[in-house]
Image (cartoon, rainbow, N blue to C red; front, side):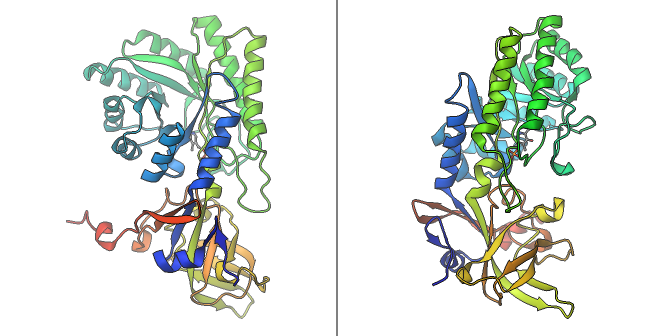
Length: 419
Ligand SMILES: *Cc1c(COP(=O)(O)O)cnc(C)c1O
């Protein structure tokens, strides 16, 4: 038959057994990608380590995989830290990010003993110093997130390194921040962090930012005597969502960055800091698909065709948020050639809730199963209850065997906080 198989599993059977919408992830693919990043970075160079950006996909199973593979974790909220803590994730392998951390978040990070805080403002450094003192937590390790002032070639909603960004401390203000850290007794400044943006197709922006930050490292050493021990170069390594995307291979992407840093340090006689990268999307995006059932199919007099599905904005807000593009198939008609150009419409009461605009598919009808590809990153983690749709389940496939990883949210759970 023409049923599509994902990592050896007939997805129409998964749709029948677990219902739709359904996130399907391949554990094998996630592990493969973690190992590939480690091979190209951690294992290729001295003092290099990759941290997984948990905001891209965070579940208990994901944490189990990361712990097994020995990869560190970036968190940006108390919620992400909560799950990591519940799973006993080693605190020293956690970095706490975020541009507007609350007191409660800082307290949670200090109490769990996270390896480092990535500080996004001077005010935050002072708060961490005060709270670390109050709690007798010892010196908190901090990195200063620097806004390198370079513009990434990506959607403006996922570009983060340009001058005027809401993220980071402007490069002109970094010297004072370093001096401040030196005067505080309860923080220990380990170095710097930058993250230029997400879904970048090549490393040119990263290299440009690296140049800026390495010069800063040289300057703070020469002028303030500060030795940078850690340089965190962020994430943002692009993936292929559609045939229009042609990302640089990961080995070249990351290898180019490491080589550049090594070269700069050698020629400027600086001890190379330990290097960190923070991939999220690259690890999980291609490891996931989302399954939907077709509801209504509308063929309009003008020729437009809408294939309506039972999900959309609640399980994947990215197309509505910044025009993200995806590819899809009719999973139970995988052997049929395309018959018409359609738009796959989400079920929410927003005209912008269109999952895919203009895709060639075989004729779809009610009850067909649509599989949308490369939804492993920023879909489950961005899911929401708009129109009171429950968060879909996650099925994890390992060695050709599927298992339930996250249960579908029940209506009782959805409304459990209502008094
Ligand atoms: C989002 C984010 C990442 C991960 O970005 P990807 O594009 O998923 O690799 C890494 N570092 C920081 C600081 C981020 O905000």
